[in-house]
Length: 377
Image (tube, rainbow, N blue to C red; front, side, top):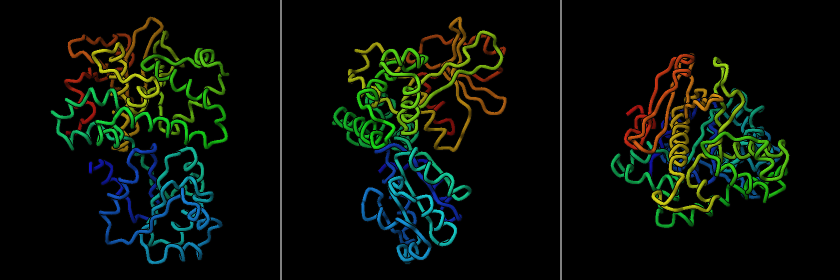
């Protein structure tokens, strides 16, 4: 069982008078993570409920303190999986945090748009939140070692790093296809807002084919034959379902900077290849550079999430096509990153950018990727 880097973060926040909410996509390992957390607290009796079960939904309906005390009994931990399925889950957790103070609530959900909406207002000041994504480069290095994980890079670029894929590499193609269909479509179509399955599939595939390029919603709407507002809504839902995330363009000082551009990346490379139907090995592909770019930037997002870091992140480009792949801004400091699959390729940092944004620079290749994805080692 691969130990997750956020286990200590979660453990340190138990029994501090707040609920612990764990968000993340389906099959990212949330249940296993909570099992590891409960194992560290085996002296605390835990009650485990699942929002997918109809009797659990009924049990927690119309909550009040007397009813909840009767349900919890002598348990010291209440763990609710798929908590977003429970209608009044925010009120349930609020009552427990406020009135049953000896009990620690842990809630997980694969639908951030549902769980967050149901808990934000009732749980103001009453919750810790964490995002659990598929295995990170750092977690896999700790499990397999630097040398083995370097050897596994091609596997990660093609099939991704979901737990089931990592632990069963022989069936990677079959499993990542099932996983993509499960959480890309099944969960999202539970929502009333998504009424056109074919349109969503077209949008996801179009985004997967534009990794590393600016995404223009006007062009996308023409490609998939839908209006801009519909495209924007679907992309926002894909973000909230932890399928994709966006990088905006950095624009503060230079006259010719692109001001409203955006790039969209996937949290997992395997999903890109599943929706495009391309699992060819790297030596047969002409998109290795974009797969590597998506991998490095998505893995950096995992590192930031695991370490509770929240810099502003961007790409940078001018109308003259000067470009920086990835930028982080913390305070008034910038980190500029160029991402190259070929370690011998020369990377140039535009003097226009460096004059406007004094920064440190990194060029990330497979030879030094650990410097960016495991900087604390």
